[in-house]
Length: 113
Length: 175
Image (tube, rainbow over all chains, first blue to last red):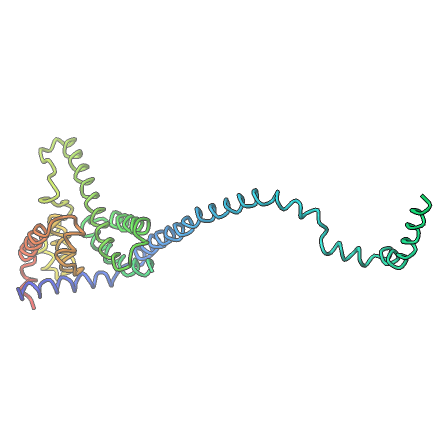
């Protein structure tokens, strides 16, 4: 048993030496093979996300189709920027300044009519 | 992670495959295929499982290679009109060696002598010996890697030791 252990250890030592003395060309080819294998894992990770992204996109698309028509009413309402333009416009200010005149005119027309 | 594991394993895997096939190209192909299979099917598994999975894949590849070679040899023998029917995986080796171990020992080429002695072993004895003695796998792990029973591992291993002792007699008794 002791002899057997020593025997296998000697064989192991020789086999280990052969591994240590590995030639460059085979090392290069093994490295190339390893890189291809690692690349497969990288591609797999990307592919794993594809269904998730597609699902999320379809959900968003569905929501957009359902919700968009309901938002149409809001589209008629002027945006705050447009309101601001109206408020800032000179003619509006003139209208407010002459508001009393227009009120008098309205009353006068009503009485005349 | 997988890159580091394969980098630490590839050269020893190549030696295992080379001793089985005695062909540089075939050994490189088998290791590459084993790497690809591990990456494709088992990369998500726990890292601790990779060594045994890799050995199992490589052993399957070696076994498939051996079967293909046996079929090729049978066809070749048939065309040659040879009555030798090839043999089975348990009892036969690919006879690619012409150098006798004793002669190589006389040339003090111990590495070559060991390589020749291992190459002359039946494939299952050879791989059982390498997995148990060199890779340090337990009997159970070797059985799992090779897809054989624990009893078969023990039998193949003891037969391999006996055959190597005969082939490398001088080397065996040297200190």
